[in-house]
Length: 139
Image (tube, rainbow, N blue to C red; front, side, top):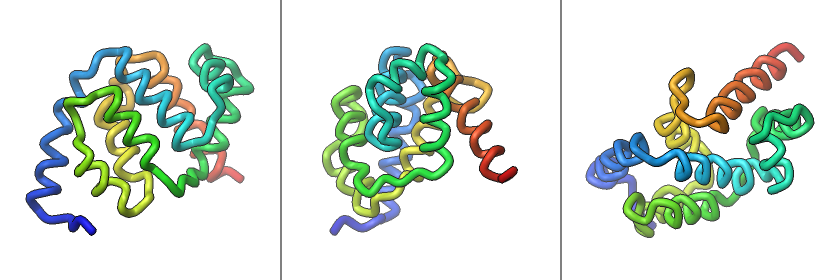
């Protein structure tokens, strides 16, 4: 088992600037991986969501409002495929030892900060998360 040593945490944090400078295509690919591998949204609904489809936005929003992902490895493996000079396999071992989504959400927030998104898909995702979080609290 890999421990969260301060050296390991510093290494993981040192990688964040790399994710600020991703190309638009890389960011979109990572967001699509989040939608399909973490939220469990189909490729068809992911395509429709990226085009602003209301039904797909609802599907994504319902999954955003209660994220259940027991295996985050497929997402991190996709990130590694998209950005081979980012995380290493050892980093992925650390990031997946406890299957929660906090590190994934932190990555998305660093990559496409709210109100500072550089991609249409990032804007849609953040707006949708806000809308469905509000709905959850209003219920």
